[in-house]
Each structure stands twice: as C-alpha cells, then as structure tokens.
View 1 (spheres, one colour):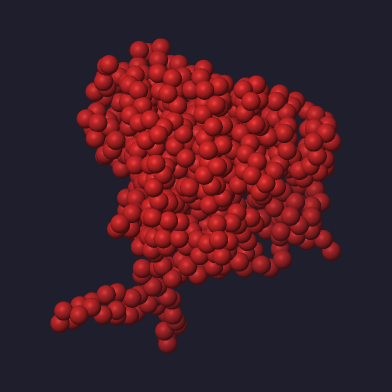
View 2 (tube, one colour):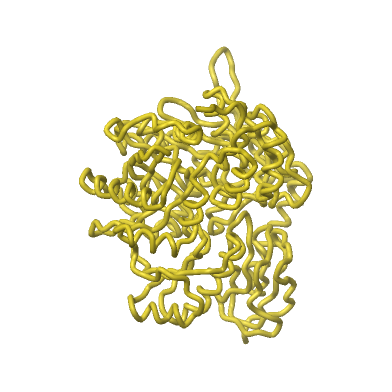
Length: 591
C-alpha cells in the first residue's frame, strides 16, 4: 500500500497544528497554507513547509479550491486533509483533490454530498430503518408549508438549512406568527454559509440531550463505534462543553446508539472518521439528526477515553489500510471533558471579542491537554471563528475529571480579549452540571453571567485596580511577586497611569453615559458586517424589536431597539462594515 510522504492541511489554527503533530509521528511531511491575516501564525511554524494562499480577501483564502489544489501539487503533497470547517464537508473540493491525482483524507465525495443534504440524509436514514426526528424529508419552499407542517405535527418547530451544519442556519418557530421571520433567516444563513437557501422543518424536541456517536469506517467493510459524546450544553446551537461518556447513557442505551450509528454509517456508504449527531429524549428515545462528514472539534475527548488517535486512523484509512482495532478491542476508560475557550464576552451576550493576546500560559499536569493555534502576541481576528483553544481533561470518573477541569481553568492565563474561562468555571461549579443535568436555560442566565464575572476576577493572575491620588491623577495598583532572602512576597505597586489609559477611560464613560441616558442611541457592540437592516428612518419600533443583523466572527447577532420610539439618523445599510461603537441609529423615545 502506498504511504504518504507529504500531506497538505487545508486549514488553519489549532486543528492544523493538531493534524501536523500526528503527521510528524507518522514520519509524513506537513504542508501548511495561510492567508495574509495568518502570516507567521503558529500553524505555519509547526509545519515543515508553509504556502501563502492569496491574494484576495483573507476570509475567503481557505475557501479557494483551485488555489488549494494547485498549492498541494506545487508542494509535492500526495494527499490533502481538510480539518474541520471551511471546505471540510465540500464534495466539490474532495472531487477536485481526487481529480488532480491526490488522495482525499476523508469520506467519499458521494457520502459528503448525501449527508450534506439534510433532507436526502433523513430520507436515506428512514429507508435504512434509522429513527429520525418527526418532520419533513423534502425541502420546504414557502412559509405556508412551514405552517402546514406545524399544524400536522405540532409546535414548536425548527427550520434548518438543508445544506447546513455547525449550528448555523437553524431557527426556532414557537407558533405560526414566527414562521415568516424564521424561514427568511434560515434561508439567508443557508445561502451565506452553504451557498444553498433550501431549508427543511423538524419538530423541535424540548430540552433533549445532544448525544453524538463517533464512528470509524475503512474501505474493507469495517465500521467501529467509539462511544458517545454529550454536547448538550450549547448557546445558539454552538457547542460549549463536550464530554464522554454521557452522564445520561448506560450500557444498554450505549449499545442501542452504537447499533444506530453503525447502521447509519453503512447506509451512507461512508469511509473515514465521522460523527452521527442525535437527540436523546428524557424517555430514552434516540433520533438521528445529521452526520458530520469530518473530524469533529470535540474528537479529543474520544481520543482520551479510547486511547486512539483519530487523525492517525484517518490517514491510515486514506492509505487503504484496514482499521487498526476491532470493535471488541474498543474500551472506554474514565471520563473526559472539553471546554471551548473562545474570545467572547459573556457579559455582552457572548459577543465575539477579537483582539490582541498580550499574555498566554497553558495549564499542565496529569490528564490535561490543550489544543491551540495561538501564542502570546497573536491577534484573534474578526475574520474567523473566535476559538482560542480547546482545554481537555481526563480522569478516572466524571467528578474527578470535573475537578481537574476547574484546576486547569484556574491555571489557564489569557490576557487581552475577554474569554470563556470564567464562564466555564462557573458552569462546571453549577449544581445542575455537578448532577449531570442538561442545565437547560442556565447558559443564558444573568445568574451564570454574574458568577462567570466573579470567577474571572478570582482567576486573574495580575490584580489591577485604579485609584485617584490626592492631586486628582489616576494611579494603577498592581500586585507583583518579589523574592527577599529566598522567600516570595506579593507586593502592591502604585504607578501613575499612562496618558492613553485616561483617553480610553473617558471614551468608555461617554459610551456608558450615552447608553443609559434614555436617548435611544443604538451603537454596534462589535466590529462586523451588516447583513440586513429591518427598519427605516421614521419607523415606529418597540423595545426589543430587531433593528439590524450584524455578522461577526461567523456568527449572526441581532441588534435590538433599547426603547419604544421612532427610528432616526439611520446610518447603516446591508453589506456595510461597522466598527465597535459605531452609531447605527437613534430611537427617539415615544412621548
């Protein structure tokens, strides 16, 4: 069997670094690609070779099929690994790679295409006897069809992009009045993220668990089930914490989920690593939701409990080799938890928070793994996903793993942009998480946001306060460690703040005053692109009505009216870029 000597990874950041490490262990040369925005980033340093994939918009560089294939050929690579995201589930990219005489480290294009159409996937699974969530198996083309399905199977419903994935293109419909908005939003997101505005409708299951199954399949007819992962804790359909095994799954249910996963994998004609996404009801019913035809972000927890390197298995399968283990050899040992450390501001509704990382120190010790693609001095760009790192822990049981994660979170030092470190510490300390519950409604609660802020303060490695001296000047108090006669002491230093700090403080104070004076000024809370404006000058709005939708770091954010009133001074339009603090409009309060 032909073995690869060089592989190009068509991705960036932590997943590129993670794949390069396995390639190095296999003695395979690693080729990186980078956009102009990623010049000099960690993944380009870890690889053996790195190639620029420009010119052009940096946010589109990793989507240029022709350039990526041409670069792989120029570098002398025999194969391409897509990672996850970007073109990882793009059948056209897989075909282009194969047509160029290269090997695609992933499933066959036909399987990607089949599972990429959620409606075709649902029909295929139903025909194979795999249980699917009640709803449509064909795309819906009009709002009336959504309403008709709701009358047939009941509300609430969820509208999903037929070509969707990764939590994008999903809109909840609580009653018929919400159908027009949700239908338009799901279509818009499907077209933007997946170049396909087809959508379908399912019954929305109330407070289920999101339980997925990891599978491996080779070209020799072998399919393995590597256990389940519980990804229930999410926000806006974006996973935040993943763990294995699921606290809600016992041996009998695990066997059932494994049987469903293997049957689904065979029905898809699948090869490589894949994930069967499913929903588990409180009554123990398990439904197929979709199949992700790529390595998952959370593959790490499965690796820790099985001892298998899933990327290595992908490479060996692509080389034509059979799976390295049999089903009877698969044993799940202990418990693993993953927390996604994103650059997001919990206090502002998890808004993406791009910025410069001024300090970065990873935790370490027994049972701790960090997958990251950044270093101190790197900038989290608004062009890409806001993930900074994945923090993963493993221990003998769930409770000891939870405590280990809390210790690791406390040790993780990231300065610069706000992160989810404090949020995760607060979440893992919550009684519902300790008890293994779904924590439904907790993620968005004010209570958890407050606790997250307290944990962030507690974990601060450099206490900084601002005081006013007798002459009115601002001073900063800083705690530093010093050593005297071999003993360490914490010493408080007071220094006059630099001029730029005063300017920044006054700007924040003005912004806060403007937000709280009842004027109704609506400013952009982030840097991004306006996708849609829903109002015009002179329109009457109520507090909470959506003014516009802004995309930042691949997430849509609805900007709402702060008060009842009339829209004036509208200053944005669809397709326009906005900066943090830029005026969107003023809502003149109703008399």
